[in-house]
Image 1: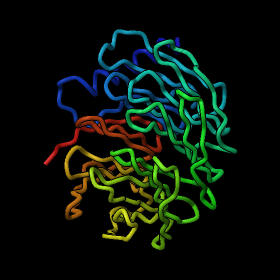
Image 2: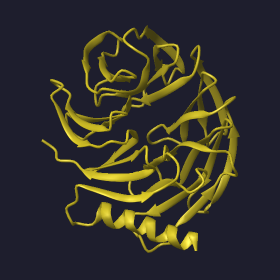
Image 3: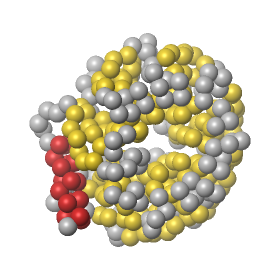
Image 4: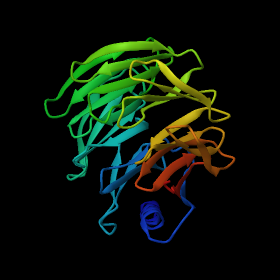
Length: 311
């Protein structure tokens, strides 16, 4: 009965998010835990956690009548997930330091890779490659090649690595940690190029700002900072009244920020002009953008969507 219910919940996701009916905010479904891991593939799939925080449901967005794929990682606890660019694989990072590789076409676990001592905080494929990057509470930054089945330790932070991002040209990588360091890495040479001490509050999220290699950093005080690729600070502004939890780039000169203050804001990069596009009581946990739809989770276990107007 529960699995049947799950089918209708996921069908609702497809209908509300991808029908032509104009929507502002829709409650897609509700869980009894904070939904921290969900995301889209390049074209076909949407993946999310459900029920016990360890089961992944994958919905085919192009062909919604195809059966739902269900993966479970045996009580490891999922914190993060990402699709490969070719949409053949989904990786999920767990609380016990493993990255599980799921074969979407065969609907089964391809392999489980032990990388970290403790929770995996984020995993992300390198665009267009069968390699992914993984960070953890152990302060280690790994790169793993699925084709060659090889791993390489790129470097470390003195403490937890909280977040990272990969530049659009796939050449560079940035990390932030509990040591308040912002580190800039060369992906091809697999080495750290430069570091900068963050002095205006503990960092929580980091993103490359777009086609340039400028870097956006959000912190626990709601401050958003823009760094140039030499890690010199370019601009700093108080955006939110609490922790910044997500930064999502839009396909123009804008980006989205989400916060524990319950607000979602759209910001124009060139002048940091800011517009509130959503405000509620529960704080926002995590968010992601596909086309003109922002999908986000809040403290009450809800997964919501909102349409974004582009300037």
